[in-house]
Amino acid sequence: MDFSLTKEQELLRDGLAKFLAARYTLEESRAAAKTGIGWQPEIWRSFAEELGILGATLPEEDGGLGGGAVELMVVTEELGQALVVEPFVDTVVIGTGLLRRAGGERAAAVIGDIVEGNAITAFAALEATSGDDYANVTTTARRDGDEWVLDGGKIVVTSAPLASHLLVTARTSGEQRDREGVSLFVVTLDPHNPPAGLESHSYRTVDDRQAADLTFTGLRLPADALLGAPGGALPSIEYAVDEATAAIASEAVGLMRKVLADTVEYAKQRKQFGQTIGTFQVLQHRMVDMYMEVEQSVAAVYLAILNLDADPVERALCVSAAKATIARAARYVGQNAVQLHGGMGMTEELAIGHYFRRLTVIEHEFGSADQHIARFAALTASR
Picture 1 (cartoon, rainbow, N blue to C red):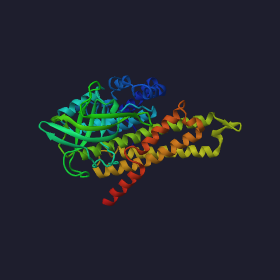
Picture 2 (cartoon, rainbow, N blue to C red):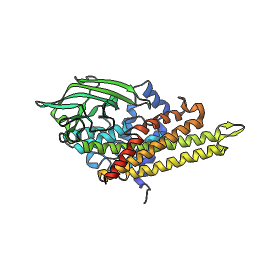
Picture 3 (cartoon, one colour):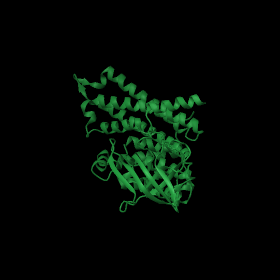
Picture 4 (tube, rainbow, N blue to C red):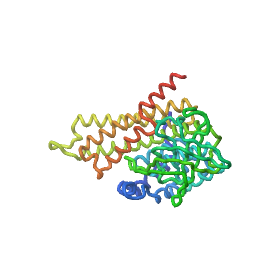
């Protein structure tokens, strides 16, 4: 099978890589995350206006560039290499994925704003008792005249403090874990005038991203806040989460490539017992093992990316295989990179510590290795 990129995909990769190398520094991005507003809006604007990557994976009728899964892989790997904290996956992957499949004028308008760089979405789906089961929804939505009324809560909603729109799952019928009855709503946010009935507790995550826990108490929404058919959102949600899982797996490949390159370079310079540590055979073997983990991860990402449009069972099998592989590799490569750097590996001054924290989060984001192995086993047994 030919895994080479087309000329257009190479131009997309090279253009993004040059932009990030010139204008996205670790110092500025961490400063924005730790002491600033959490991100760099001017960078996001450039993603839209100069690079066009916010629409790179969307069809032309939605204002995109007509790309697809491979373009998603190209972009997210480069974002991983630069350790970009801006909410690409939350907005471009999950946000546009859910909106496109829901359809309708409201969804189309938000997609247009995303492509132009004017909208950020956050996916509010997980609850305190739900784990990673997106059918386990206790948040409710009920009709009251021409409005919907939301009650409940969501936890660890990444990008919520930055978002202009929330995409919220709520149960409109059925019991707590029923697959039928889960609906999706869009909540428009005004930072200067928060809607009555929405309480947000914001915080910074260990990998320097912005998140919030949300509480809905009689939050009133207009009738067109419902996206798609009532009670039928779960298949679209599962599709979007699988796409996002493949996207962060690709991001992890970019992270691990950078971590490995920095570790090899450090081993060529750090001296101990009068010689560089890179000459020690045991450490050479360790770095070869790290390289093998990265290459296995690359193959796993190709498997997931190239099967995103397969039938739901095949897609889920490939994504779970990739995520389990990535989770193992992220831990091995990250931990060994820190160990080979010694105590310096976890300092703020070196990039390694920042990359390690993001790899640690990716290990568990959208499901741990154990959860994906269990899903893979269950789907295989049901065939």
